[in-house]
Structures are given as structure tokens and as C-alpha cells.
Length: 392
Image (spheres, one colour):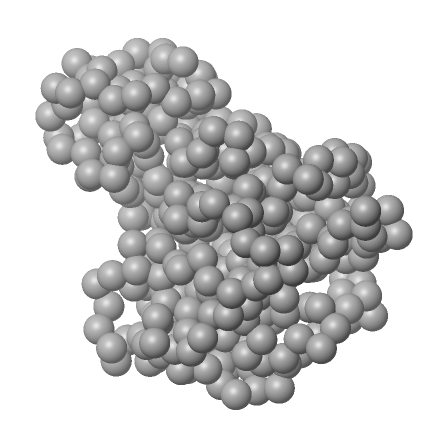
């Protein structure tokens, strides 16, 4: 029996946009689909993969980490074998989700999917670009902004990369909108339409949640797919060949679509393989001693304000706490939650233990720092001074 190609959704977006949180919510909400998720991170260890494993539904969700480098780019030898491995288990998988690094373009994956080795097994379903809406509204992705110009060549590496991610997306997801008013949302949508007029749909994600019907089974790249051809992909328990129509999805998200004619992603338009800028640095710093949560958060905020850092993420061992603290930082915005919890971490240690997840290190603190010409030794020295603990 000839099986239909596996649909693939590519999730792109700049560092800290909320791609992993959005995917985690999707994994929880997309049952009964059987999903395979490929996570690519720019760094030495995989924090995002560990986060997503908290949302695994037994054998119905499988997570594959690809650390270091840029997935599917010219010198990557991991992507094709991994995808062929997934293709060999076609009967057990309904959909593949690929989260690219925050410093990558989705076009590399889109191009590789059309490789003769993969084209018969996979079909691009849609490409989503996740956007940190508050940063967009404050102009942090504009050429000449502090974010774009803090360091030689950074303008090209931030504003330019951000715009290329948008330009190669079918759908832009405006994330982190929970505290934004309607006027701000309209401003954000206008900016997206100006920067990337070819984007077909703009969706809103409150608390990093997007309805699976706006994400999976869209079939935007199949022959004959139209502007409003949103349909569910087949799932278990449904008659063979049957799909469920989405209906008018405008009732779900409450905002507008441009009515633009559909654009196509093809080999001819996606030959570009983005050259990684060597100015971007990623490194991991570890501390074996238990830390004070408030002191650590203040230290990271201070360092992010003085050093060319974009992203900080990882887990911290806290004095008197049964669980580690999840650190998620974008620029000087440092957020913390207790491991495996959706609640913000209070200054004091928690009293109720939470379920442990499979993390890169069992104890202590391990943080990943990503920045433009960021200097590892200098940041380690500042952390040691501000926390009173040794970092290496």
C-alpha cells in the first residue's frame, strides 16, 4: 500500500520568540495525532528538548534533539538520516514538527524536504514564524535599534534575519500578546504586513497557545491548495480518506486575513542557505552550588543590560528547593518558573516537590547564553561576583 507523504510543519522565529512554549502547548492540545518533533538549538546542550518532553503523551509524541549547528544547512549531515528514520515509521506518525534554531532561516529545511531522498516521504504543510510581539512593538527588530546595532554587523544579523524569517513564512504567530491592547495588536499586524506582505495569515497566541486547527493539516503546499483551504489532516479513528473541515477560523482568533493570493514555496525561490554569522556566540556556564533565586535573577538582568546578550535559558539549583528553577531570558526580561510548573516562581523556595524531567544535568545550575560577540570569561566573572559563587 502506498502511503501519503508525511506532512511537515516548520516553526521558525528569532531567539526567545516563544517557539518551544507554543510547541509544548500544541503537543498537549493536538491529541489524538501522533507527532514527531525535531528540535534544533544553537548551543551545546538542549534545553528546549527537555521542556518539550514534559508534554509527551507516551508513544504518541516523540522528541528528537539536534544540538549545535544549523539544521539542514549545507554542511549538516544529521537531517536527512533523521528524516529517513521517521519515514521508516510512517505507520506510527501522523505529523512532523520541526523547530529551527532562532538564528536560522526555515528555507534550509524547506529546501531539503524537496531533496529526491525525502520528497517521496514528506510534504511541507506550512511554515510558521513566531514573533515576540512586545519586542516588535518596541522597535527592537528595526534597523538602527539597540538590539540591531549593539555590536558590529549585528544590524544585518537581527533585523535582516528577522525579516527573512517572516518573508519565508506562510503564517505569522503574534506571541506574548496577553497584556497588549487592541490598538497595539493592530499596530503589530500592520508592521508584519509592511515587513512581509506575502504572509498569508496572521494568528494571535495568548499564553503561547494556538488552536491546532490553525497549525496542523493546513495543506498549504499541496497542488491546488488555496488561500482558505484549511482542513484537518486524517487522524486515527476516522474513516479512511475523510478529513474534517475547519470552517470559518476567523471566529477562533478574531482578527483579519489579508485576502492576498496564495504564494508558493518552491525550489526556485528557496535556494538561499543563510550563512551563519560567526559573531553569534553560544556557551554554557555551570554552577555546582545552590543559588538564591532572587540574587540570580537580578544578576542575569544586570548582565543582560551590560553585555551583548539576546538569550539566556536553563535550569538553576536553588537553596532549600526540591525542584530546579527554569530560567527564560530575552534581553533584560528574565522570567522564572519552578520546574514542570506554569506558575511564576516566588522568591522563597517551594514546599511541594514536582515531578523530575529528563534534563541535561541532574543537579546544580546549567545556563545557556547566546549573544553577539559575547565573551564567556567576562560573563562568568560577572556571575561569580554578583552571586558569590564559582561558575565554569
